[in-house]
Figure 1 (cartoon, rainbow, N blue to C red):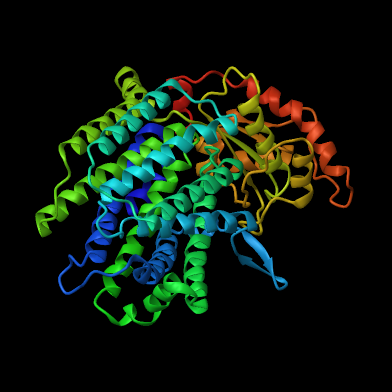
Figure 2: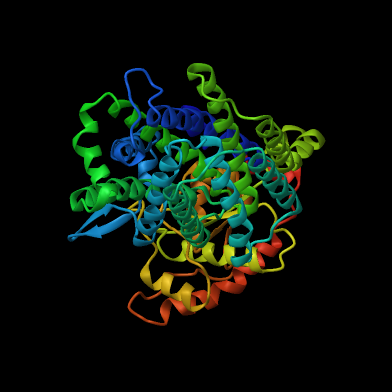
Length: 509
């Protein structure tokens, strides 16, 4: 965890960072998969086979404890946005993020359940899940108009070949109807989650992406426990009765502690997996990177269970499938490796940060940043490659405050997507990592230079002629007029950025 936290304070390295996250995901997924199958099958000493629904409440409690523990130890709880609650401000997920958390709660529950069906190999179930999510990736990208690079298609092809080979080598598994229903819910959860993630995050701005992660994780943990408790209270049918048994009986049995441990493992693997998905590149890149780690983890878990309990080892086809997975990983990372060979360690700093600055960071600067992101996606800007955009304020009184409602409405009026936003105080590190800083007023430009004198040569007023003051919040035309005033300015400033080079990237260190 300390390594993850310290890495977040260094310049962002897309491929190298994603490979490190994939390794973390593998490390967390292995005990999750092995413990789940061993516990549900009665392979752990002192336990007996227990239905997955009976174990699910203890797993949900493990997630509920593991999630805030990570957020507190990492300090990332500060990324949760401020919301008005009964007349006071509290750190709470937004309505959109509660919906994302609901989809994620479905994913957590069905992932666990898919590994608990009697007589069904965990590797077999994993491959069915991965085949579905790999197929969803290009669909979501195309729906969102996100360009899919050739290496992502190659990696996707290798991943699908791995699934095809593995499925062809698996015989004798009759999939229960419950497993098929669980798989369908799992894929529906991912579709809904990816759709929301595409709209409000996945920007390359670590502040936005971390806010998405923490708000979704908190919401998912609470929703998962609440759903289990609600269905257990209703108690209709054998499934809800099984959940009720999980709350009333399993809590005092030997199965409770390992089930709780499974939930805490998921809380950690969620962090690594979600950070991979939040990579600014297309899902057709991120999904294979994530899925490759889990395939390798479950393969390793299968052999561990074979060694410890004597269950059947994975057939040879699974090893061939694993080879295809490794080829997919190579396809995803080849550009980073080539750049590293050609340019040396400086290739690691490959994403340039453009920073917009205003006062409280709730209106002008996040609005300008949203316009800049839209221009980078839709515009014809020669230097757009490798740029991420963020914003901050020189006098933030309420860190985590959302964007002003008038600013959000104005962006919507002009067809610009308003991503997740929580106000953040400008820091020296932000200035030093940015290749260009655009302020709304001359006073703010001087404040930036006072904080980070070394950034003076790349700190500008967005409009070099006049200050861009705060719009009148009481006027319905204030924010739309502000959008009109800065749209061309933002486009011009982005076009002025030089093309990426090792020397230019080095200034962002």
